[in-house]
Length: 417
Ligand code: ZN
Ligand code: ZN
Image (tube, rainbow, N blue to C red; front, side, top):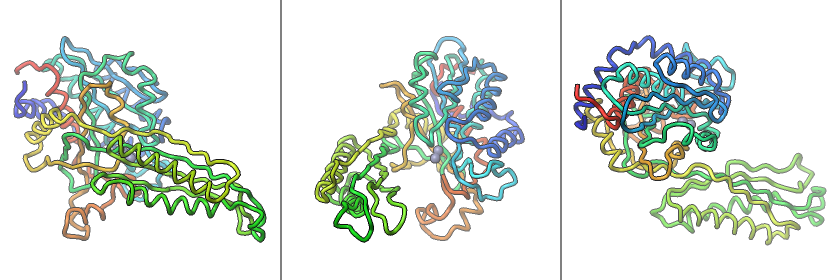
C-alpha cells in the first residue's frame, strides 16, 4: 500500500472506533499529574499498561523511566514511534478544569499529548494488525526537557535490546491555529550546546578594589564581548544564537567576590558554525581573563546537547503527502527551520532515516482574539510551549493519533484490504 490516499483511508478506518471520551480522559489524567525529567514513573506506568493491554511486549525502566513496547507481526520493516513523557518546572496558570495538581510542575510542552497520541496509535495499530506485517516498536522517552533522555536510552542499549529501527517517527505539538501539520524536508531543528564558565578573580573589600581582581567586571566584559560572536564572526546567512542565561556572582555590595559564574546556550545549524562559535567563546573568555590579570585561567566546560534534527527529505515528502490526504491539502506546509532543539534524532542509529513533524494546537477562539494581522505577529502573542498558559485544543487529540498511525502504515508492509 504505497498510495497516500490508501494509507489515509485505512488510517481513518482503523481509528474511527477510538472514543473521544477515552482519549480525553487519558490525556486529562496525564495533564493533571505532570512529572519532571527522569521522574516519569506514573506516566510510564500508564503508557506501559495501555501497551500491554494492546498486546505489546513491554519493557519498563529503560534509562530509568523509559518504556519500550514491541509488537512483532510477521516479516517486514521495523518501525519505531517515539513520544517524550516529561513535564516542566512551570506553575500552571491555564485555569483548566484538568489543570496540574502538582504545584510548580506543568505539562507546558504538551508531552502529555504526545504520550496520549502514542498510546492510542499503538492501540489502533495493534487492533488492526491484520492489515500490516512487520514490527512496531513504541518508545516512551524520558527527560527530553532536561536533555539526556534519548542519549540515556541509547546508553541503556535500546538499539541492541530491541529490534533495530528501519525508520523512526516523532511529532510535537506547537502553537498556531489548531489543525495544521507542518513538515520540513531536511533540517528542521537546531543543535544546542550549553557552556559553563567560571571566572577566577581575587576577592576582597569593596572599598579596596586595588587589592582584588574583580571577577564581576571581567564577567561583564565577557557577556558584552560575547554579543559580537554572532554579529561579527558568523556570516549573515548562517543561523546562530548565543544567549547568556545565567550570571551569578557575589553576596553583597561591599564584598568583591572571588569568582563569577556564567551559563551560556548556543544554537547552530551547521557543524562548522558550531565549532566557530565554541572556539570564539573560548578565545573571548580566556582573553578577557588574561586582560583583567586573573590569577588562574577560567574554567570553560562545554556540555554537548542535542545535535541538529535533519529529516530524511524523501521520507518527509512521502509522509507529508499521506498527511495531506488525511488532513486536507491546506493543512500541510513547509515549516522551515527553527532554532529550537530536540534529542529525538539520537534514537535513530546512524544512517537510519527519520521524520519529525508538528501539529498546531491553538484553540480557534484564542487565535482569533490574538492581536496582529500577520501570522508571525499572532504566533508571538498566543501562548506557546513552556508558557504557564499553554493549553492545546482537545480537537488535536484524534488528528495526532492518525498522523502517527498513517506514518507507521506507510512504512510497514501492508496487505491490500
Ligand atoms: Zn519543551
Ligand atoms: Zn517538547
